[in-house]
Length: 155
Image (cartoon, rainbow, N blue to C red; front, side, top):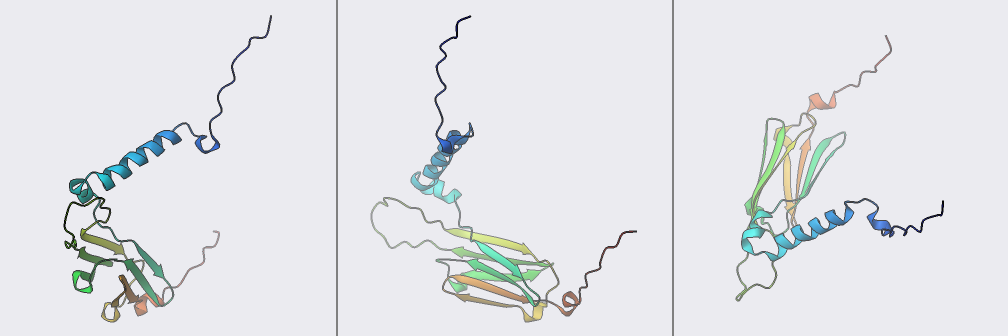
């Protein structure tokens, strides 16, 4: 039997080792274009959703949220049922005249709720707002501070 001359498979670029990588990249490109170039109706779907961190240490739980373009008077923080809710609104600025060329910023009402990992002292909770960053400090309650870890032993 004579060896057949089989053409070699074209090699994929190393970045596309997974067969669906190109499809995913194309879908990402389509969705990015939809929200940035499709006009006001499409941008309304991409509502403002602030990023936030929650950190717990021995003394407190601290939530830090980035609220660029939001004014202090437009933010409300509530503590209820072992959760903190931050809500507010980023209002659209309407100073420019003429037809917009490209609009990427998002506006609108937002609401984020964070389940607390422990009991906190609601009377000593403090929220501060500086340079577009909201910080909520929630001191742990005395009951939370007395939590004791119990060692697990084999039976």
